[in-house]
Length: 423
Ligand code: ATP
Ligand code: MG
Image (tube, rainbow, N blue to C red):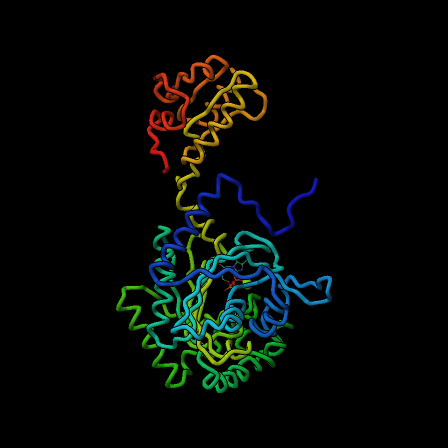
């Protein structure tokens, strides 16, 4: 038997209602905030992520699904959404419209990670990006969108953590201090962090190894070393979040996994999940649009992991709404004529917005009625040659058992089952 690849999941029909609810909620909130959906390719040139996510990140160094296509190009399945959106923003000249450009997406992402609860090799993100606006009002708007999205999903126990990781100006001095601090522990750091020490010491703060994270605990914090501009920006963001009543905690240890962040970074963390508790993460970046070949423009965005949200919802909302798959009407048939007559009628009923079904597996009449029960059909009708000649049949309400004679036209059936005909 061929099974699914490790780290992938099938979403079975019983669960798809949950997915649809999350996606609909995301789209609804985006509409209220003026974010427009953008759809982009599942794969991109590998170089986009090397430059856009950053060569020193775990995502690029260890986690990408990269392969050579038949034309000898290096292709990568998207590990995240931001680099792609920046590419699309530049390639489609979206900067020429009145700014900011507000974009949203729901995408599959691929990362070669060790699969565990809340950590998959194929997973899904809902995210947004806002290009061309650098005010603290923008940061607060973006964060409040994520906050509203999570609130609308009615999940509880989610905390917002925010931090500022400065800009290239203040990062330069800070990185020196950080390097000096970690140098003292050179002998204890993991091999990856030794490399980070040279290339990007701030990455060490994000290391998941026990020893490195213990050492990182007492490292100097970026938030204490912000330049004047970054400091006042962060104060501005906090003030605006307070103003809207969006509650947050300042967490100086958030540095985020991707290289391009500057100033505000944030995470929403759920208390319903174990180790993989971050349901949404994001931040501001500058330099990325330029790095990928565009005219300088600031960006800010976030991405929420849909599988992690599903885990929270399943834990907290045991009676979450299931997909309604019950047909409005089941037509049981006696003989081939009836089966053909029913198929045409069902086609017309479906055109009018009625969910009608018939047997497709050659069941006996008795078995067809059992099947109609299994499907929880709301109404049923049995037709044979007589009914076709008479053009009428007995319609049964499957809940009350009541019966009534109806003529076999889609309009009359619609009326009798209290379904308003579409058009
Ligand atoms: P983590 O620290 O958990 O690895 P990350 O910093 O790598 O997360 P981001 O790149 O910020 O994650 O992605 C945004 C969100 O996407 C995460 O907060 C999480 O909800 C989700 N996510 C990231 N990686 C995975 C994965 N392998 N499987 C499922 N969801 C994921
Ligand atoms: Mg990760």
